[in-house]
Length: 336
Image (cartoon, rainbow, N blue to C red):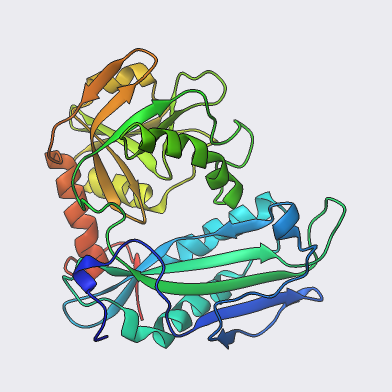
């Protein structure tokens, strides 16, 4: 691509050549369809518009030093979408259909895969929406599954540099027995006020506490939270936290590096005991946290102006696996 500055790409949408679509109608999934349109036509009473029947995933494809394109844990994203679909009564796309659609979308847009060592990647967005019409509150009888892609730069412009976050207590991302454990749009809509409040105060994002007691750490903006202390990787466990595929991968790698892993409820008071903290997810892999401000107590927890040694080691190791620079001993990578 002659006109794309790969090294200065934002984390945003850039038009590519094609997307891939598949409809669920009359009780079955149809064939994959290729479209060059950026538009979706649907009924004005579609359940995704009125009752929030919508789920999405976020993935990335990377061009390795060998020129091969790799996708990270594709089938795991497919299974997570199935869990999301089941939670809000949508038809689950088969894993094979999901994987095939992702592969096809990448190959059709191969020229948009950023080159090796450019700092950019091809972001993949699988999307499932209820397209069947319903005026009463009930599941749709028709669904659209689609995959589009776009080249992106780092989620935060600073790259792998610490950001500052702010604790929020006056907003809940998800209810204790709600949809926090699945990837549906309503969770992200609910997070917008707190994110805006944090950004206006000069922070990158907000750190949520649990909705019931405001005692335990929940998610960190749109990502999972983790802390490092005493050679231990600590990450919150809760029904209202999305099971992050990135976090799961980091826990696996931490154990292999001889780092103890604890996935458990984490009280906010424990923030003062961590040597490093960060947020993790597909978009940034790991974003180190430099400081966390608690407006209720006026206390600031500080973790340094540079990423800590454990976060740095895990970040570079996971990225090396994604790019094919390190052996994929867990069969996480699909070569396109």
